[in-house]
Amino acid sequence: MQRVCFLLKVRADRTEEYRARHAEVWPEMCQALSESGWHNYSLFLREDGLLVGYLETEDFEAAKAAMDATDVNARWQAEMGQFFEALDGARPDEAMRPLTEVFHLA
Image (cartoon, rainbow, N blue to C red; front, side, top):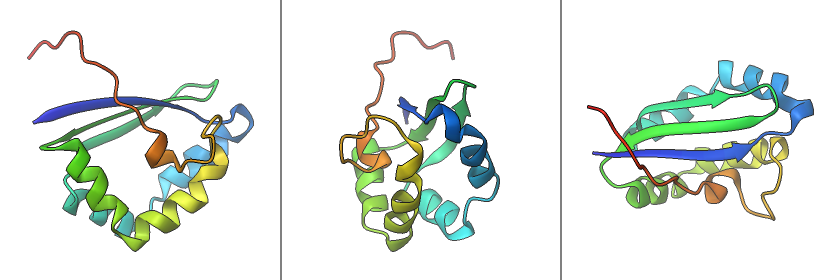
């Protein structure tokens, strides 16, 4: 199982709305994530907008590709893109770059 951690930056003036949106994630989005292999998925948001994501999956590239093939993901990414800084035209899910794990205590 791969453990994946990534960072994104939510616009500081949009953090409250971002939190509110994630308090009511669409059920079909949650289902698509689970069916695509995204497990134990968490997002952590610091007050200045730093977003830390963590998930476990068998194959991160395959899990991303499976989500990319869903209609619900396209709709979600289109709505969520407005919340982020420095995407340079990419969708939020395209801008995720996994961090290199340097230590793990099991």
